[in-house]
Length: 122
Length: 212
View (cartoon, one colour):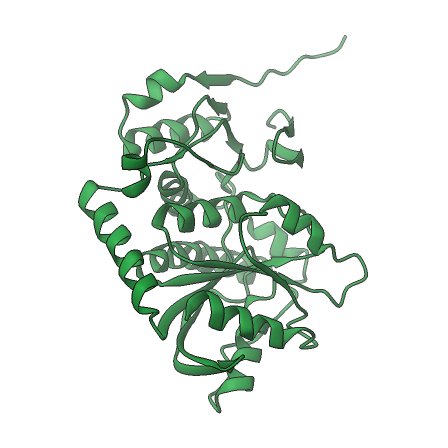
């Protein structure tokens, strides 16, 4: 008999992310990832939110408990109106995959595709 | 980023572009083992009589504290620029002490290095708020689409600050700077070997051009 192990994936819509503050997004991601879930963000994070997530991740790394995250997103795209571009609000986040570093592994990534492998926890 | 911070940065970038600032504080960023400290040491040796930035090692996260050297004057192609150079610890999204043990470190040493490495990543991120530009050092033999590269480039674009990509380790047979150029075509890139010093004059010209 083959034992099937499961991994939970949470796909978070862009609409939900739009209504959250940066800190709420980061907390949501880390809380899920630390319990072994894979999180897919439809509209991703801004570059500033990405570095804040990495910073917060570093503060939460614990020996034998949590070694960090694997995060993959596409290079950001410049969009928006002239007014948005003038004030640095033109860079939009794109689809982003985040998971525990010991479970999510990137196989290949380019401008248009991210391939990952997910392993089940011990 | 708030409205006023965005306005301040945009105005700052605009003023700098008009008056062509000749002094700049630049950070060396990149993933662990890309050769940031090797490059920082070479710049200091070539342009000042100061001491080296720090030691280099095949074990990742050898640099775990940011180090700054002030007043390094680079003359290239008829122009001159005075740099404050900040060599930052390697950026990473994960740090597992077991990886250091694979290089022969004891468990205690590996755990200590891992803890210091996490602090180093935070320090590197904090420095992003205090720089005029970035040299993003990539290992030409590795896949350029790492999240560290994507995140650093995204942040510099959002802050409208100059970025120069350094495709390092050109002395290795499987180096492929064209792969880096194809990944980030919107940014200037200079292929070099920081270890051997090859093409380093092109880098100095690019620094004077991009940050001057």
